[in-house]
Amino acid sequence: DGGITQSPKYLFRKEGQNVTLSCEQNLNHDAMYWYRQDPGQGLRLIYYSQIVNDFQKGDIAEGYSVSREKKESFPLTVTSAQKNPTAFYLCASSTLAGIAYNEQFFGPGTRLTVL
Amino acid sequence: AQSVAQPEDQVNVAEGNPLTVKCTYSVSGNPYLFWYVQYPNRGLQFLLKYITGDNLVKGSYGFEAEFNKSQTSFHLKKPSALVSDSALYFCAVRDPLSSTLGRLYFGRGTQLTVWP
Image (cartoon, rainbow over all chains, first blue to last red; front, top):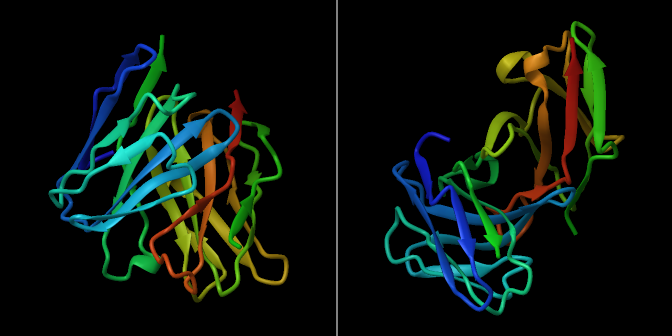
């Protein structure tokens, strides 16, 4: 988990609320990613960004939004439009140079629970 | 389309015995393959990867994996399992011909349990 921090570790949300998950990295990586993990479903890509001020939707972007104003930060907002947000959220990063064969580094995750 | 299959949701093995966690993949080009491990309520940790060259790849904590192009497989192995190896293991693939070079496609994970 070194180099990537996610906060908070646990987050509780009431229905109808937007919440923002923080992801910060000090690895000087250009590319950053958000995944959602549900039991038995592996990791599903929500959004990813390869440069500042640019990002692309992944496979399950509906109900989520992101921003990439700084290289080291890639916050994820879970909006009220996301109908089933309870899950474990993982942030990752990687270098752009040789991105095809570089591994991604993961943060420790945020567990979001809707009350 | 790129995809990864981990055919076993769970693998159980006795400590000291060899272990194998299976992975098969589907990509349009030559694959780049990765294994990660996840302990409870933690992020994923990188174990090893295959990019090119020797089909047997050695990684962290005594793990290794064998790339088999004809069988489109990349099974994770360890000669002697430890109780501390008990965790969730993910296989991932990247297609170098994809327009989104950075994307990794993950399998659903295999829960490995090593009993004493």
